Image (cartoon, rainbow over all chains, first blue to last red; front, side, top):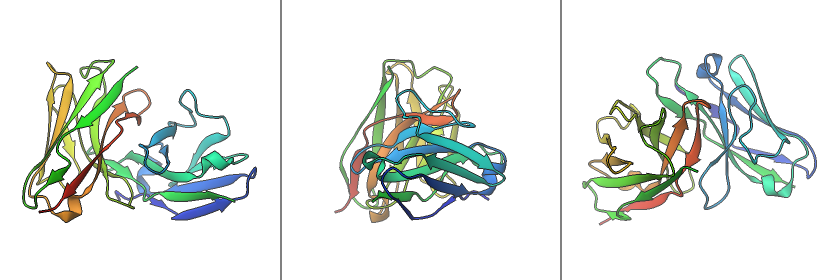
Length: 109
Length: 119
């Protein structure tokens, strides 16, 4: 399968923990990467590999994976974390294609 | 650090060809990375269009493959996208991005350029 499935919307109370999930067959073979996108801006990489953060990404962002599901967890969500989040990975069919999830709109209440 | 900058017409007529260029600065396009195009229709999610390696090897989204050509110009340190037979459904913000060989993720993105298909 070449699809990654995300919940369209998730909400979290300020300071609480939220998990955003991404499901797909390709995740059995590849780690998901996670991107944060705020309105009018380009996506920003927040998690890659098993659980790695690029420089400048707060440590409240973490990643995990089990079977065909990858998760992005924000521990102690802040108002500035309100954004769209996308997962992606290589297609598991071996043709080196890239697939994106449909995105999750995170609202911080 | 490496930066990417898209350029090209913001308006393309239906049935025409969309042409964009991504200039790479602060680093070499001949590094061990793939270089991709990603688009985002207004209010919708991200869609991978395709990628190129500095050798000229390419991979394309199967849904767009018949209309897409991605090329590289190492002398100018840039890569380009051509999308033919465009319709209103191709209206989107088009991003170029670096697929970092170590991180296996899109670690650097251009700011994006809006392309509208309209007569």
